[in-house]
Length: 182
Image 1 (cartoon, rainbow, N blue to C red):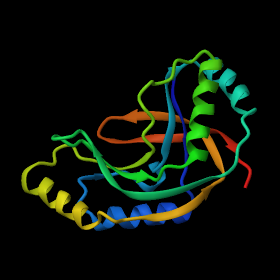
Image 2: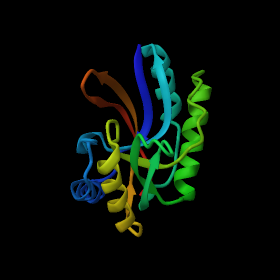
Image 3: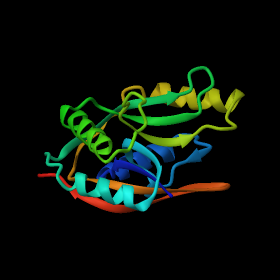
Image 4: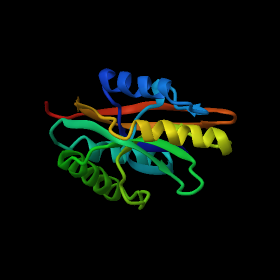
């Protein structure tokens, strides 16, 4: 079984901006540069033949390059935040691509994750962060309320394998890349 997702790899200039932001914040578990991505559709775990069928469907997707821009920071988890992310600015091309990839997964008889699409790039897991450390991070986030970066042209999307590891960040491997028109 292969744990997989469809996503975008930010171009180098976007990665530079995200990494600089990570360096400026007191993050307990920053996501390594090589793992920074935007998930379009989480697929779950499937046998290789199912992902090969999906690959054939994905090869037929056509679209324009996505102008990815960041327009602030956010957290998931409400009163007990567990994830800090860079918010991706609303973009019709991105929404359209996400819908196409979701439908492609369904065509390949994969039931993708049904959570509402919230375009973001995870910057850090916040597990273990509380009290003064959490307050310091919240203050730093408040000082960066107007943080923006981009737009950056993303000219492809990818089928990724996700390998979880104990006490270490996951490993993401590109299984296939699908170009978008510039």
